[in-house]
Length: 336
Image 1 (cartoon, rainbow, N blue to C red):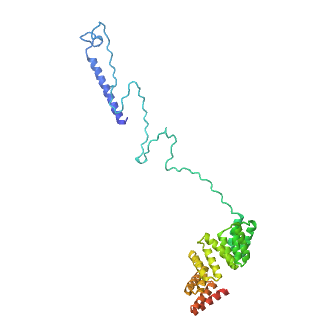
Image 2: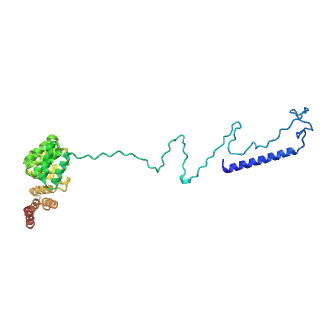
Image 3: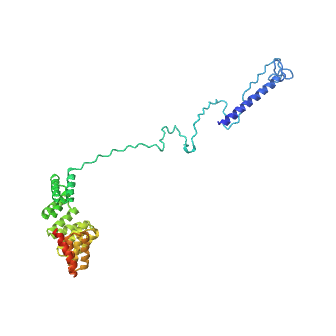
């Protein structure tokens, strides 16, 4: 019940008590017989409306609350005693912080507030894996090669292979360094061992095709490179080496499509432009040859071979001054 409801209730009770007191006073002032008991024509009245010759004391009227009360609450059943209501006053929250009441019986565990960070247990990060001895040596060999120390790189690759003779990457890279040093036969032997471990490896086949071409074993080289192109038609390295092998056999016009395709796949390959220029010069496409050599010179301005090719094309185009300039620059670079 609200504060104003309780005040109204107390006011009604006071009014009822005052009215009961006034009624009692009126009864006290009215005429009575035998000590104030009411009579009917001066005689006591029994329960049947008649006199039995005996006087009865009237039951006094005790002031009490009125048996009715205007209230919005349902009327209590008289046989049921109303338990006292305990009202707990809670501080009123602002509208912004108002929350719905929580049913404790259905939710005994209070939920965390939205702004409370929930602790998350993170799995421990795995400890960094230490590189194996093979990987350490492999990286060291590549670093030595990148720094131009080819002999040291070859020595490290050999050391690695003495520990693990099945390391295909190390053996392949050793073969490439041997090829650069002109040791074609040993390079071919290393590549054969790679293919024994990984038959059909396309990169190894491309490298073996290049080494076989250096050994003038053109038929075998052609076979290896075509196997790669059947499996990987977009392999620029295979197109370049096959064009070079065909050109060395003197089949210039047949070499041109492979060299052009190599350039389409890898436009920055300077030597592909050089060999394309050479092939175009052989088939008397001087304008195409000049463009190819000039592009090669842009990519490799200090290549004596490329400058000499430019000189040859200028000579054939009757441009002697430019040809002489290219020859001179080529000789100066070669003499360094």
